[in-house]
Image (tube, rainbow, N blue to C red; front, side):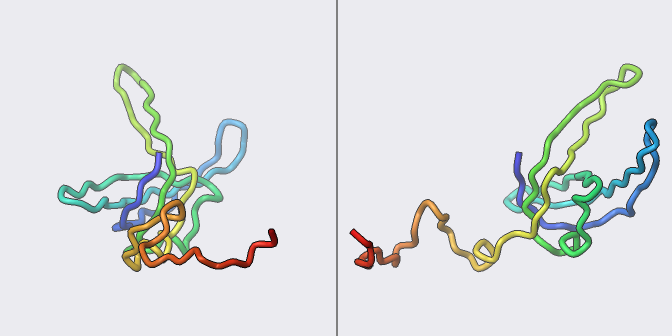
Length: 116
């Protein structure tokens, strides 16, 4: 799944050692969606996906993530784990409403520089 949202809070990095002796680190971030009814979502960023330059409060992020639930002692817990976090592109920030698949209205494809 993917989400584009504004970063509103960065929680402290958590560190530990797993059962196998490998060290791990995790950082939770709080993002807020846009729209008529904005929602806040806590997303966990693990290991080398933590990029302090991108994770700055106020940045708009494009986040690819997985949602997973697990049961423990009869209760269910849900995690939202990011597997890719990027700063939103400048095209979206500039207000362009077209994508690579759909050229803008003023696009001119009349160049005749093809080799055939």
